[in-house]
Length: 302
Image (cartoon, rainbow, N blue to C red; front, side, top):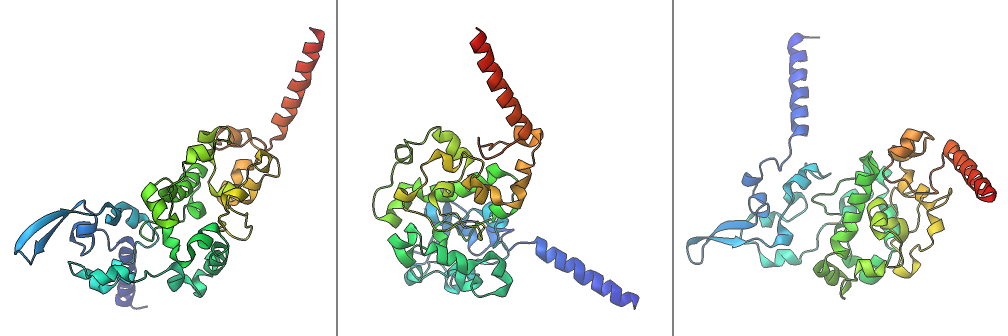
């Protein structure tokens, strides 16, 4: 092959790598949208009075630039989803009334995304309490921010990270009175009081996801999206604390968590989210039985 041709192919390859490494959000201060939406204070020229002015940005419209660069949509520009008319300021008032694009508008019916089962997820979601209460007004974006979404459960090798990220999605609304009331139409329930029946609340909230108790288990989906009403939530300890735990079909079903039950002492000792009854280690089980009977024997002698 001609050396010059090889060199050109090499240059094209290097340039393609560089394009993949870059994000449209690398320079927030000069980005047409982020120069305002990444800051608490916006500066603009007020044409009515002919002066430069500064105002506070609505906190709900401030974009986490680190989050968006780490999210799945990092290579899409704002106007790929938002109207091009947002490029000018002040924004036209009617733009805010336009419906936002949904996930299925881009991902639905596309064979390249078939493995993610967006249509199945939509079917599951339409059975959920969220859809029954709010209908089409409850969109994917109510839980999954298009700006910062990361498929943590699919990619992480840390169960604590998966739990924290998943629960933060629920708490972003259920622990925010304003957002909850806007969606639900009534006052935000007090989570601690609602879960008074649950022993060791803090440990449960830290080590398992809300959806472990508040969804139907869906074996064929990575995450079940059929959120149940509170009267159908799991309340029996044995549902999770047994050898055939429902956690094995939900939180522990990911390939990246299989090493948690590989039968080694190391995996149990290093397991920050060890749940009694869900993982079995034969040697420890045998030792516990021996210790139990020895204790009984000693008590009888004494």
